[in-house]
Length: 374
Image (cartoon, rainbow, N blue to C red; front, top):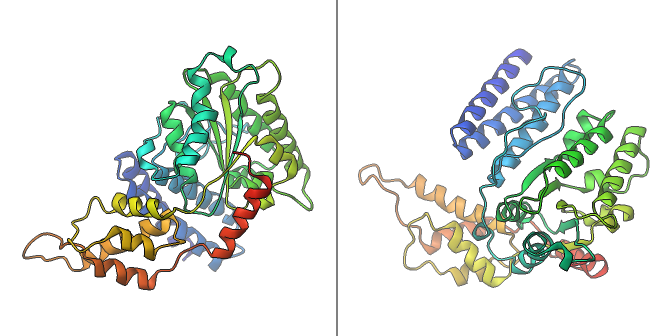
């Protein structure tokens, strides 16, 4: 049974990789998800299996690929093992291939205040003479807020806007795979970013779920302490007096209250990414349904009223569920999908609640009042 599950996971992963190379994003995500499911099932059924650690590492790698694909990105990675061990196609290693993120400002619906802050922090310094900015510019930017509100997407968009070298740091992989050498790999990322960065093409080091690296630890082993110290030193080095480095560290977190105060100070900009307001929800429904045939009774403003407290991801899922309803009702004789009507959306909303509670949103707002620095 164990060998069969291993073969199934490998088969799905290979199919996903093929789909990714062919540009079939959704199919690739499905393949990686199935591979993860098979690996986790294997580990659960056989907890003493000697290769379980390897399987968990593979599952983490596949999860990273899913995140990349969801952002429409191919990331540069400069993590490399010094052991000389063979690497697989999906293993995080030194990679020379660069691809520009395929996300534009138009893909980020709403969040105008967040966009403006990122324009000032990252785009403006590349457009003006550095002598006009004698005090430098912020190089550490923290995006915080509920999950599913666009933090990752907006990083991809700003990277596209400035044609940045984008380095993706996955804390789970750093901690699990390179605990003994994690500080060396952190140094490699910054070294490579500094080497490539220029005014015409800055470098962005993006750390998703940054609290996993910069949170408050009641106890930590030597490797973790060295890694955290290295990260602090590298971030300090980006805004040292007299330097004009076009290198940015952008962290995203759903749990800002877990951040260590030492790291919090290194993020000069701390920007709240809130759930969408009414007008943004209207635009989100328009954005996610533009590929569907809509009946004349679909009222986006009513839908926006009914989805107060929903995240952008929640609204995307509502529209996706409506899409599947249309597929379920596909008319083979006519050979086309029917129109989506208002009742389709209302029926889906009657069964789907927002993923973020009012209490949690209040907690973000309170943290923003205390520590926000836009």
